[in-house]
Image: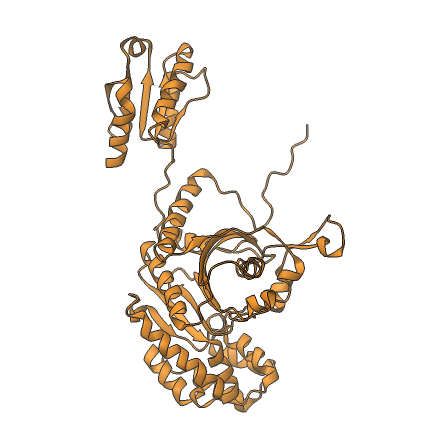
Length: 444
């Protein structure tokens, strides 16, 4: 028989149990934050109708979408695509279920697919952790989302990170202030959003290559090169784009937003107003935000913003919304580089071992009794394995406790309870072993 190709598809990977332990620990901490703020879980299908997804992510997003050859009847049923993000499906859900009570606070943790070039922390199949609130127009909702981002990064152990803040109307104000033609406003946003990757001179060249003339280009660059502190940036923006209609509206939202952060417990040192930050998706309408760490240089860990018009495309009525994606893969990659990932441990808490094959069925009965106490327990399934093989199996997996059943123990109604970390053991009455284990695991 020929050997089949066993590698995972490019841009995907297998996640083994030892890796899953760290992932689950990180996800559990993120979910705990979401739920402390009153957000509830939602799931949507992996496959969406192509017309639902198309035109929502900009030109690049449409190119990166995984389109499927459908098998349904009719043209519309055959035009399908894998989910590109979790926000557009949320918009469809809100239109499909008009009875949902508003404001609707949901979180969603599911895989998405994008046909982009794989690199460190970036895959073609990856999980997103989204948290959004629908039906709240106040910037207090945006501030709460940023507070959630801040708390998630903090509880995961990050200490040096920056949450960048901007407003789409401020970007429109920059275009108006600089004299950039209306038709070139999108080109302006695309160019300045590349500042971190290509630097000031690179942005200048990018603006010129996109047909933005020297006069507007000089004004844009002067604005972008202003001092970095949030206070200084706001002062510069007030003096410049504050005189434009769009810029004034955006700055008003920004000022109000910043006032909510202190009562929400977000330190001013974590926030940076950044007029260079544009966020690539077309559906953003107001405040936008992303978070970054200085080391490792891995791109944004979270990113989101307000998208007040998106749900209306499906529902036919205005429905304000804001939210963010917490990039699980990048967070895990950053935590691994920084040595912050929890130690990989098996979730199995107890192994029931037996001295000879005649005791195998009784070992399963002991295991069932232990499981009834809510303890994760398994029996070594290679029935020909010697006791030393079973102990080695538990040790290799990092199982903290082993319960050993032998003929003498069976006759006396006891078991041997072995603490793998301390390398000691004692006899325990069979009827008491589940309680002893529960107390030991709770105190661990």
